[in-house]
Image (cartoon, rainbow, N blue to C red; front, side, top):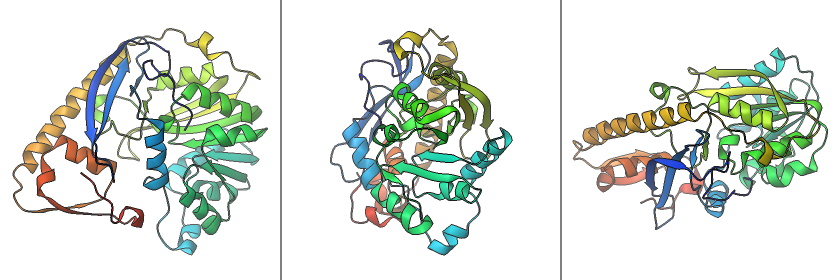
Length: 343
């Protein structure tokens, strides 16, 4: 997680002009006070984001304590498993754009499962993650020596990488401009970045609860491609997948084509905000209708309720509906959550 930009300004274009499109009050694990979040769209550039974003210290605590992205299961089985859907998409994209095996570094590598797949295809691999337990798993399960920390602390120590992988990372970072500048600096000339993020596309394809605590940014394809261009990358290929996951995802392969990116304050050119404004308001209206319908259905439940899964999505359910008074227990497979309280 990079340092947060000024909370009163758009993280992409530094405008102060926003529309608040949805507010949430989330009962986070082991916190007495609910966390209030405003999801907004910039009226200048059309980028959708948390504005202001969740405090960095709260987010860092969340990643260290609860959202640790660990693997569950037997180690030999995990090592022998085929690539996950995410890893398969990354491997396919790397092959189709003609990359030869070299030095690959994954930002937000979690327990190293994707790096394990790239290594099996001849790549020298390394990565970083802010979760101590995930880093321990990367070493114990896959024999991968990953750096403990976020890209802000880890990437400046890297140089002349052939490939950087960032799978569902950029939407979590406070300052995308600064993060992409570090990606750029760590790559060799002509090196590549492959990233994937949730894709802000037509509202009908977006699920209820798409605005969520961990995601600071909601990228439209044109906005993200422009951000990469500003950072000194040439977009090689963009793919939007609306089928494989429960929400649309966008994968982009980009090549470092400038030795030094332009100053970010000089490249924040005006972008037409109309598409982002329309998408944001249309989705927020649809999301409200979906949650209203869900709340009405749950209002018919009179019996005690047992929830499976403690965390952000449960917090959203409790915020958007009146089910909390019926809940008698919450279970989760993650032992770090046992004994914690929620709402």
